[in-house]
Amino acid sequence: MIDNRHYTVSEITEMFNVEDKTVRKWINEGKLFAVQLAGTTIRIPESELQYFYRRSQARGWKE
Image (cartoon, rainbow, N blue to C red; front, side, top):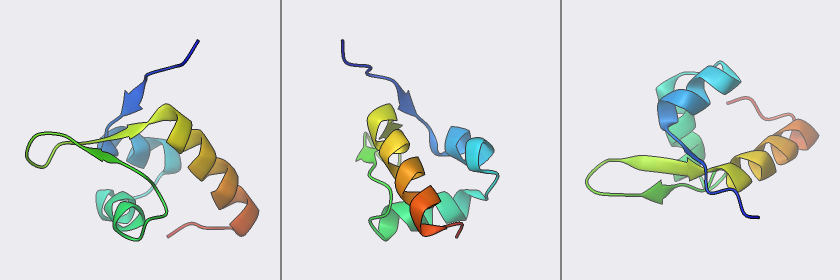
């Protein structure tokens, strides 16, 4: 079964203990894939979040 959970930028900031601008920077730099919905609404799929977390741990990314 595929998990279709998507997270908001605010939820990601809480998980990683970073500011909103940091999460948006990750997205803009292509480090974190996000889906843009209507207007400025952004969602991050759970599968991408898990992939990002594993990569960030291996590479020591913070900001």
